[in-house]
Amino acid sequence: MLKAGDLTSRIMTRHLSGTNLERAGDHNQRVTLHAIRVNGPVVRPDLASATGLTPAAIATITKRLLKYRLILEAGTIRGSRGQPAKKLIINPDCWYSIGLNIDRDHITLVVVDFMGRVRARSSREIKFAMPKTVQSFFNRAIGPLLARARIDPAKLVGVGVAFPNDIQGAGLPGQPPEYSIWVEVAIDKLLAVNLDAPVFVENDAAAAAMGEMQFGLGQQYQSFFYMLLTAALGGGLVIDGHYFRGAAGRSGELGWLPGRAGGGDERPLQNIVSLSALYDSLAAHGYRVQSPQHLLRLDVDAQQVIDSWLATSVNALEHALVGINCLINPEAILIGGRLPGALIDRLASLLNERLRGYCGKIPSVAPVVRASMSEDAPALGAAILPFTEQFLPSRFALMNRINAD
Image (cartoon, rainbow, N blue to C red; front, side, top):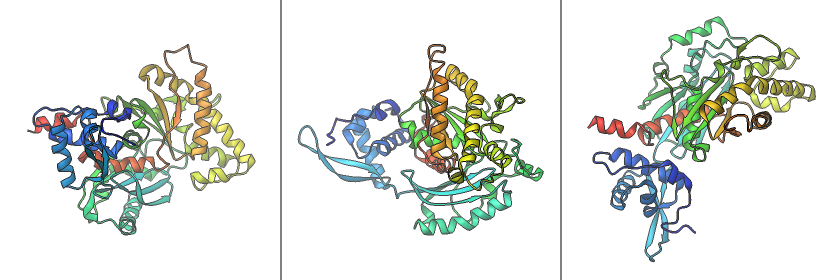
């Protein structure tokens, strides 16, 4: 049984840092709320110890969080001096968020609670959906999704959208010329509906990495490179618990690195290591794939095509991952996206086997691991964007608060 003063979670000691600076209440509240979300049920003395805030500050903050029902009391435990301490947990039903992932082969919509759990979901497999198609899907689906989950629209904190940078520029197989219309589209205006909630737009790989940072293996790894394998190939970079954007906001663009498939010509990695490339290889052998899960139901001959694609992907990714290890020194390289989990595990295993050959030749080799979030990672990450904006700590939260005052 957990006792007051006996928190063993390294999450709290590594991740969280409060401050007692004057006028920094918003930052401290975010840090405290995050500590409760990650570690609840948790008691106030442990919150003070983990965040570095005074017991008085924790008492004030938790009183405020309870008042607005962002947290709840969930029973008591007996402290070291025999005094009962009340356990605190996040109220998952206090706020909700919508996440939308627009990609070259599907549209996925999720409704997520404050604990990051999906309450309702709708998805459509469609190649190169045009803006009007996305708009129609969103407008038709959102009402029934909220009704199915019994969620009051007034409790929506926002809508997050995961949208690939240069969605029209990857030049994937079968992409129609008119798909270039996306360069002219304002996503927030496209999704204007009768919801009193702001819209946040983020690159799909960045959204997936942020979601993993806040609700997934980011609780285990402070620094990681996230590889998003969907219709194309993207990447995201988390360093010391913060998403790193780069000077132009385009860090982690793994898919644009040059690569080779066998002895072929040099081309972007996303034209080799992606679902589009895999589907194209299967189509050349007479197999038409309707969805990622269909990959697991193909016959033995088709599985040999998949095996060949996996081997080609490992060869194409090898030097890129060596570069990531040398330049970034992450704790792990995470693979997420729409490729079924069983195939991600096989790809990770093959990559780890290849990278073991570099042990002792380069300073450090990080393990390649399947990301914890599901194939809906970009949609889930998008849904977390409004929560991050309103409630969760970031390295900019304190600075913005002080400058604002």
